[in-house]
Length: 488
Ligand code: ACM
Ligand code: ZN
Image 1 (cartoon, rainbow, N blue to C red):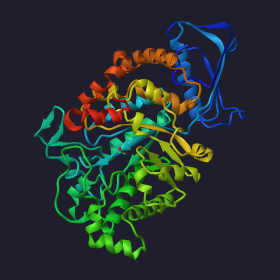
Image 2: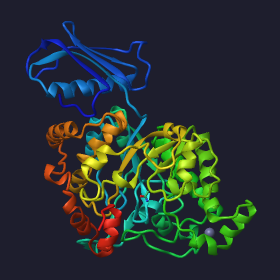
Image 3: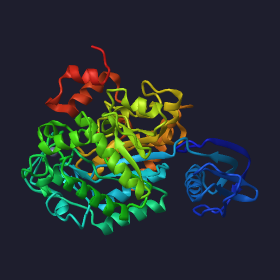
Image 4: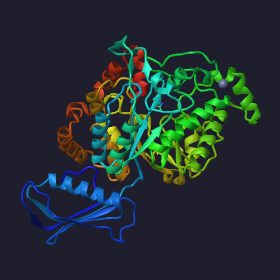
């Protein structure tokens, strides 16, 4: 039977339940006290009909989703069966970046539909970056009137557009997305990425950078030196105001404060940043970033929120807040392993293989499917237990439209969903492939066009060529081979 993700336990029994083709059988739903794992559910089909038992509303919702998937395998009848299902991880996330390229509310909803179908329960919405600020903030209106529009787009690889490019979500639209997700038992995790990746914020409020110079939202991909000044009280005021307004809309448990790729060159030369460092008795600029994380983790805790930050944000070694979850995307130090080994929560969002904006030649479907979120180097048994889930992002520097987004994400997000629900044990790639093919047809019916099967697992001999094409002239062939761990 084709199901995705695979259920924890499925026993087919003798006998069939018949009902009119095209109709739903009558389904009884209950929430018995015997089910206690969050999001868990049971489906029992026998001579009495169909019974879905859920531990909670999410469990009942997932039970119904699974029943619908089972029904796709049969016509006018269902086999008697017993099914019990519970997720391995409480955090099963997908991320969308509408900053590099903007996506309409309807397009975002279609992606949510696709992810919800495979039982993702967290939508990480990356609302701010160098190339555009995408959420209406009433107390700082220039964030959208100025910060949401870049003068042109020069991402390369065929895009060189001299026209201004912009877009943002109004509060009404953001609320609509939150509501849409709620109906699908998905929490929206908003991200305000600080202190780096903030060119669009500085374009709106130049006085908040160390140099105070007027700049424009970026028109190309990259990591940029101008970041928010950590020694300016007004920086903290703006961040608090954005958090306040976003928390009114995004009513879930988590808030993401970014923290990736924040070069410290400006801070090192800035009198205000140096004074702040010295006043706090800190020694390194990474510690100053850690101070910002602690500050906003505290601020958000008072609002009843948990904080997520990218793994670089804890490099200073002084993030000590019990309210912080680290999103591990690219780690060259032992900091994230130490963090997890001390019992602090981590989400596995590893560049290899979960960054689905990269080509299938680089991150083939099989590598996404086989990935073990607990396989990260240096994890103790407590460290492994600290992995709270998985997340896969679609960054959009080179994803200019909805069709390209669908191609990059599906079926790879089905593979992520499998691991999010079942962990890395008991994998069977051949069986997954059959389900993936089956559900790609269903996705097409939902207006989502996944990559064709021939692209899913690029032959090893063709992986370098596929990846060279993606990087064009930006990386040497040798560097790409190292990237892919392909020996000369
Ligand atoms: C990231 O990819 N910079 C989190
Ligand atoms: Zn500064």
